[in-house]
Length: 133
Image (cartoon, rainbow, N blue to C red; front, side, top):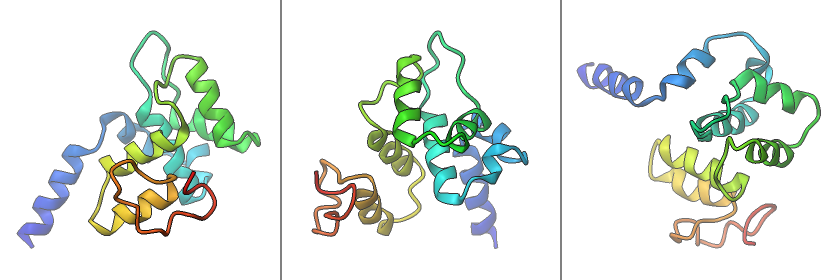
């Protein structure tokens, strides 16, 4: 029982503060399916704290619900100076590494994000859509 409580406290302490304010609402973000919430959260957390005002999770989700693709949303945010990564795959891969829940997630992460340079996903399973480029 103590281990569960300690684990929960550690997980809460490691969660980005900006994400906390966004997760309890019933806004546009909450209406996205879980996989799309993950991408929106990855974009949200990847924003730099430079000159521009960062977008909220709801603002990012609203762009998606207005029929924009994630790649287009990424490019707009990059043009606004909100992101510094080279592509959306880097954003999602970084997010998944920061929120890693176990060793099995490494293989799935590499496949979903198009592979990794570290070879973590070099088991040959990443040759589907978006993988093995």
